[in-house]
Image 1 (cartoon, protein in one colour):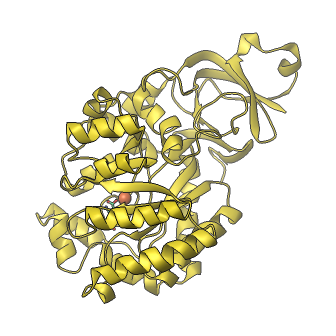
Image 2: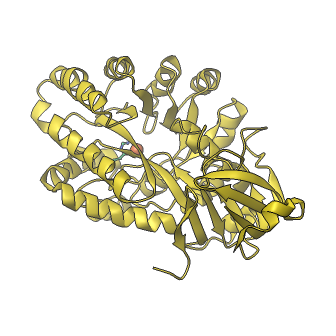
Length: 409
Ligand code: NIG
Ligand code: FE
């Protein structure tokens, strides 16, 4: 049983108070046994018994709950850097998609990729995520779009969960776009998702959630309802890519279906947001996607005024958000979405855990939760996000074990 001492400031991020309430403790200590936290408090209040434990030194740094990236598209074939240049030159995300680029070009590359290739590429990303203080992520399928190719992506996540320490919560996103071979009959594809893909994924417990991209060029509200109701019947939780490029009713559907989260929300109306708040659905802001697509960022203050909890995630994917730097997304959540640094921290820890149904286990530093935490090189979260530097984690601990120490490979 070790104790972490010499902590400059520790942010508990318990489910108390509003989003800005992160329960800071100056001069803190943290005790854990095996995989779980036993005690959190001020170092001077350590019991004599805890004071004698093996001591880990935080070097006066900031200690936060292990960061949770609650929206990623982790595994995919290829990249699409040429589209980045085209968008800068003026083409829109939708125009590029209509000309054969976008999601469908990644579907082609993903279908061609072997499981081993997808595994190795994702593993390299996970290793870097550990250096950022990230300890849990959500990861979607959605670049396979056939039974076998969606299973291939979810099997990669399953194998990664056995092979490395960052926990991956898998989400089925077979309803990302309609694949080319079903373009003539959308209903046939929706039927494939409902009658074959969802049942098989649920039977093999390969996903915890089902997500639908509700948007022009992707899926309609009615198709999303059909798919997500089927997912619920098979015991999956639901999520939605909602109101990203236009107001499409996705947020209201998320409320109606008691989704775990509604993600993006750039174009959601006040009524949509108050429906989300009433249904207790977490809103997920993905400011990297706004940054890379020249989109209008979410006004997170509007979400907070309507009573919505705002989680922050990267949306890591090869098109709209090709970065997995969650601390950068937190900075952008401040400068583009106008969350304060404390609010961004609660959004990337406790509320992100709620968005993936893991809040009973992770997301805050308190007794009985998992010993998932990061020691960051900053006196407090304000300084961390203001004086932004790449790779701020000195130490990342997952379930009581160090998974990254600065200066060691
Ligand atoms: O979350 N919105 C849909 N899917 C991704 C984009 C995926 C891609 O461009 O490959 C997103 O932004
Ligand atoms: Fe996404």
